[in-house]
Amino acid sequence: MTLERPDLSEVEAEPRRRRKLVRAGTMVDQMVRAISDRIVTGIMRPGEKLDEVSLANRYDVSRTPVREALRQLAAMGLVDRRPNRGAIVAVVKPDDLASMFESMAELEAICARFSAQRMTAQERRALEIEHRAAAQLVAQRQEADYELFNSDFHTRLYRGAHSAHIYELATSTRSRLAPFRRAQFRLEGRLEKSWKEHDLIVDAIIRGDAQAAGDAARNHVALVSVASAVFATEPGDAETSVDG
Amino acid sequence: MTLERPDLSEVEAEPRRRRKLVRAGTMVDQMVRAISDRIVTGIMRPGEKLDEVSLANRYDVSRTPVREALRQLAAMGLVDRRPNRGAIVAVVKPDDLASMFESMAELEAICARFSAQRMTAQERRALEIEHRAAAQLVAQRQEADYELFNSDFHTRLYRGAHSAHIYELATSTRSRLAPFRRAQFRLEGRLEKSWKEHDLIVDAIIRGDAQAAGDAARNHVALVSVASAVFATEPGDAETSVDG
DNA sequence: GGAATGGCAAGTGTATGCACTTTGTGCACG
DNA sequence: CGTGCACAAAGTGCATACACTTGCCATTCC
Image (cartoon, rainbow over the protein chains, first blue to last red):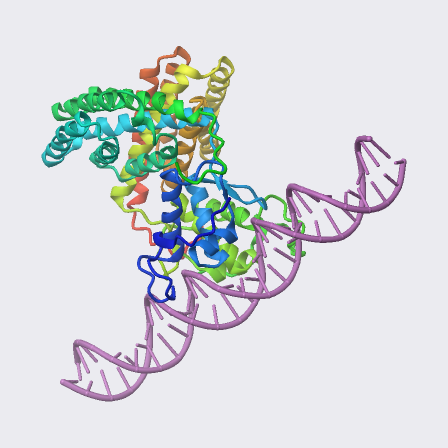
């Protein structure tokens, strides 16, 4: 339905002249962030059309920067572009989704393994403290807050590997998977299971047991994969509804 | 020196009107391929400037498609773009380079492991046949041909994992590393060592020994990394010379 | 009646122009 | 003689106009 209301809050707060007071980076970079947020958080659903002129109006720019943003998003894998036929939010086939979860599992295994070997004492301590604190969120069934913590937890693992490129691979793969797993914690008992799986990872990292940390992390993602598959295969027509 | 000769051979063979007979895809896609080729094969060296108007003249298009191509190349990690300050062929610091080789080693380990588990009988046979044939190239010191075979060999491993996303991660990481290892086979004895390392991988895959295949592959890349590091740290002023 | 063709509308691909940012250079001033 | 400012040149960022492609629909022909 390509809703028409301005809703430019992501880019700028006021309808004043846009030029000369751009806050951070170029228009294109801001739009890339804004649009990828909308995709990753599920506001835009897979298959939804990304019309160049609509986006140009929405963000109050011309088509040129929109096109550059779309190309960059396509390179990230978040949107599909067909020549002369426009762009849509990336639709992945079940096989691709499985492949991406599998990759994610292996990447997390690597990160956990390296974390067990390379994390500094401070990093280990912070990881453990945050993980312990999250037990509260589990006990109180704070799905939303736990989801935030969960994201932070995994980011710690990626950073703990102390390898810029692996961090990049992990975060970009995670972004591409995000649209397909945002509801996983709504599943009955998933919160507790997630925490216990984390516990195994943390324990192994603290002990410096790389093998165990890697295996635990791989297993954790594999289970998330199963939990998420439920939603990915739901009938979801994904075309008209704007947000759930 | 930004050589001025036309040299459009990569894009089109004749100086006739460009429109209406573009062969494959859009101008932007063709330029992305052409420029990434020039970077990956070492014709353009890290740090070299990518001026928009020069590229526009070179490929006989306006700046708009050039900008889109540069943005896509930046997303691939092959070029660095600084806002308002142009683009250069990506320069990676030694730490980043090490990180990328490390990632490559892990990715290849994953591919080899999966290949040992998942390759079809045909794939295993083809891998072994090609590998055996390459022994000729080693014996005859055919560095250039062996390099081609080597690229093919690793691509077989990536495909053998039967996972689209892992294939993507492996090939893109490989592209980003390509500029830094193109001379590795010139090192004394590297050819023989490479073949013997391949031999271990092939043997493990044929036997279906995932663990051994992964370890052998990781080790293989680690050694390539060392061999390439020699060139990466060479004084190389990387500005004027066009090909070595 | 159905299939093929022509034109229309929507939307993408590219060219071009102007505004703004950055950077280098020369001159004034301390 | 060194430091800082102003101005000019080069080059990027974005807007706009136009060309071309695609999909749809009505009309026409078999």
